[in-house]
Amino acid sequence: MPETARPNVSRFAPETSVAQIREMIEATVTRGLPSGNTRGRSGTIYELDIGQLIGVDIRGHPSSRLRVVVNESNQIVTAFPC
Amino acid sequence: MIQLDYELSEPEAEIASELADAEQLELHYYHFRGNLTLKINQLDLSARWGWVPILDAAVAFAAIVDALATSGALEEFEFTESTDRIRFQRDDDVVRVSASYIQGETAIDHAELQVASSQFRTRVLNDLVARFPELRTNPYFAELTAVEFDH
Image (cartoon, rainbow over all chains, first blue to last red; front, side, top):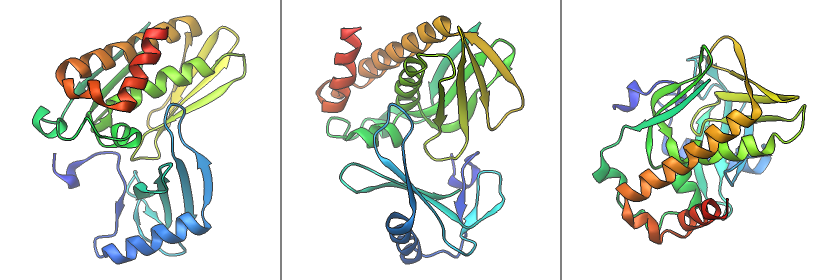
């Protein structure tokens, strides 16, 4: 399935660079609010309002919030606008 | 009445790579993606989005329902790559179920939900190891199946 056809997923703005995503992830893990993952999954969820539009959420609405999931080794599992 | 089912949407050849060494969150987030069917009574909570990680859903549902041990207990299943969620709240002997992506709410006997989620977990584990034998040597998958044998 093409990435653009995937339903119920959020997306970064098309012009966002990899470097910008890295910066946002670092800010979110450093300053974001941590919470536990869904039961049955390990990992920690961090969320942060980046303060500017970064993409669209799962409903296609503009979003400035980033969610990052980090594993027990502090490696990034996934990151997406929320 | 509950229907809990799935279908994988990825070609097996793509799934099968490096499964023996995959870590826990890799198996939960990146592998065995597909469509999840969840119908309770007349409410269709299915997530036919093509990318829902099925092993993750099976393990999480069973853990969530097990955690609904007392009346008032609230648990949520969050999809891995989405903020959509399914909400489970125990109310005496029933569990009220709703989801952020559909209208409505339904209720199901806790014991029935527990049997269904446990059977779904068992079926998914058995199906996956049958289709992808390299999972037998994956340490995390071995933990999951060891718990299965303890039940």
